[in-house]
Amino acid sequence: MPSFLRKRKLIVFLVGIILIVSLIGYSLRSDSGESLPAQFAIDTVGFFQNILHTPLNYFVEIFDSVGEIKNVYEQNKVLKEELQDYKTLAYQVNELENENEELRAMAEVESTLTDYQTLNASVVARSPERWFQQVTINRGKQHGVEANMAVRTAEGMVGKVINASQLTSTVQLLSGFGTEHQVSAIVDGDDSIFGLVEGYDSDTEKLVFRELTGEDELEEGQAVVTSGLGGVFPRGILIGEVSSIELDSYGLTKVAYVEPAANLQDISQVMVVDRDLHSTVIDEEEEE
Amino acid sequence: MRVFLLPLFMFIFFVSQSVAVELIPQSFWLDSLYYIPHWTLIFAILIVTFYDREHSYVGLINGLAFAFLTDLVYTNILGVYFLAYGLALYMVHVLKRYLHKNLLVVLLFSILGLAAAEVLIYSLYFIIGQVDLSFNAYLINRLIPTLLINILFLFIIYPIFIKKLVKWKYELEK
Image 1 (tube, rainbow over the protein chains, first blue to last red):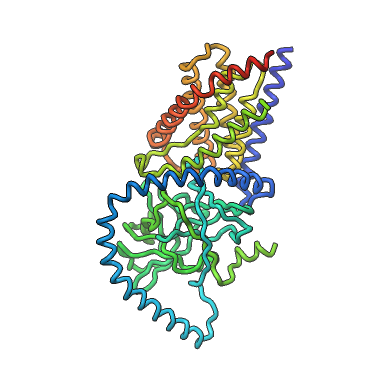
Image 2 (tube, rainbow over the protein chains, first blue to last red):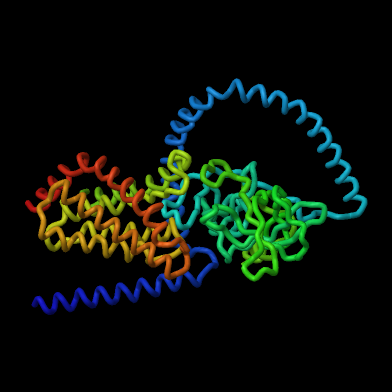
């Protein structure tokens, strides 16, 4: 009898290993959304995360606001000064927008890469496994979120939707971007420098931007924004600021390290960005 | 009823670990140190040590179920947590025969189980290419903080659950 038991254990063990290897292989291959049961599981967990998150967040916010009261006076002084500038700036922006609209109407341009709609969402949970740098937001397909949409905060881009379930979706943060999540970007300057954000360097905690045009005009402090040429994101979402420039390992092109504009550790409110212009990636999925 | 009670607690820990990670601000910790809550694993180790008898596998099955859920919901790659938690819990299941059951032994089991699971998860992700951190950096920045935070969790739930688990075990035997 013991020998039979031992045999059974061995068989269970071997079958388990085979199962796990095939599971890992399967999940590495498929990148086309989650199956229906998986969506159901994710939504159920998301529902409870939401229930737990709401009251806890309330307490955390009370603690936070007690801490903030100390700084209110100093902040108020600075903000008042800035408000004066802001008013004139707002007026100018308004003026420019109107002018832009008129000019577009004259040129018969309907919508450009820069136009997009946003959808507000709050972050309810973060993946405890930090290798992945994913957060869960409380908006899903029912609210109009689709996979591959960009996600931003008021400060700048934070990531993109990698998986939309019916009621929640999973957002891959910039700090977990690898080569499979390249972002077409431009460095804002006199001449725009085109390039790709190729991933995140976890040692320096910066994004890696590789220029494609080969002109020597990269400078520290320049802003990096999305170009919209990747086919999914709109143009003009701030990604970050160039903090240092290096030659790449072949010495042919330059690589810039980009400090993300948004704080990727402490995110509570985000906006999901849906661009107005037709996107082959997102709109084709909808038709399926 | 009892059949559903343990999975219910597992589920509560499972959900709360992600919410906890989101709500505790990172600045509260040192910047490059990461801690990963493995609360479901800790609770499963408690079940294995105090609730399971020689040939019952309640803790192992619960641990595996929630490991699979972790794979599904929190990561993109199925099977990694499943394997790591499974092996860690089976190790505890085998070891508990040789030792008395008290806090020190549970502490030992937790440290062993956590370290085994964490290192296994790290090496699997490393092989797949998900991770490119060197082992030394991993050891200092992730493994040690993770161990500490989960041991702290063990000390919190140990006095709450231990008597109940033992009581349920004897009720089951009657």
